[in-house]
Image 1 (cartoon, protein in one colour):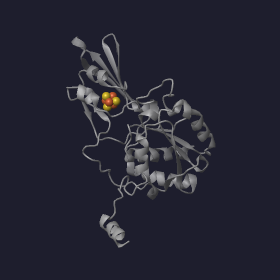
Image 2 (tube, rainbow, N blue to C red; image 1 turned 30 degrees about the vertical axis):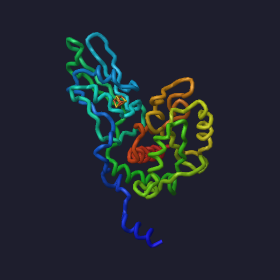
Image 3 (cartoon, rainbow, N blue to C red; image 1 turned 90 degrees about the vertical axis):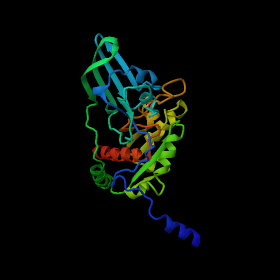
Image 4 (cartoon, rainbow, N blue to C red; image 1 turned 135 degrees about the vertical axis):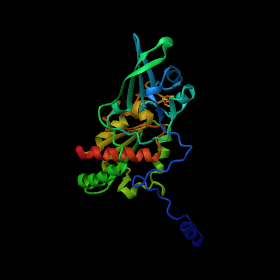
Length: 282
Ligand code: SF4
């Protein structure tokens, strides 16, 4: 008993300050790939190396359109290794959740030069809506939104629609003393009838399609659905095949998409906070 108390006091406070304080991430953490579009001379090696076709190229005459879809990206780093120019680098970015699937897609247009290399950058486009980047302001608004909308804490029902459980490991971490989700008035519940939010992982296997639909229907309004990870967004490495449907929004409407493979706990937290803002609008 005294040993346990001593250990508790010795451990001290381990809960992170995020989102009040900036997130502390390990220097070894691999976030989303970053692209230096203005200086990117050849996107072909990266596109060829990408295992999920998150980087794709379309050419028309003397122009090339390069599309980066973060919803398909599994943060594997193959593109950065294949691109020897230094224009593609893996970053520590994890605050990538968006309300609109289109905002996960970046398109860059180039004039082509001799040998198929890229010349002048003619267009750079990212979805239509601006992405929320001020996490502290977001959290302030979210606390207000939770109380204004619900008059109580936010209840989440997690649905595993056929994931590899990588996302579940990170979601479970939200409840540990380090991330301590309950400090924000957010907790997980066992029944969709008690939930305000569905946090859905996996590419949605055909066996889970009906279960997901029933869970959605059983959740009372106002409700929000959050698609977690590359699989939840677009099927990830499983894609769409005889066994999987290729993403949560093929079955139920999705309000927020959280990219990653899997997304780290702070990325999940960021997406959940973003979704609460969405709930307030419903
Ligand atoms: S990090 Fe993303 S974009 Fe780069 S190769 Fe891997 S899946 Fe493709």
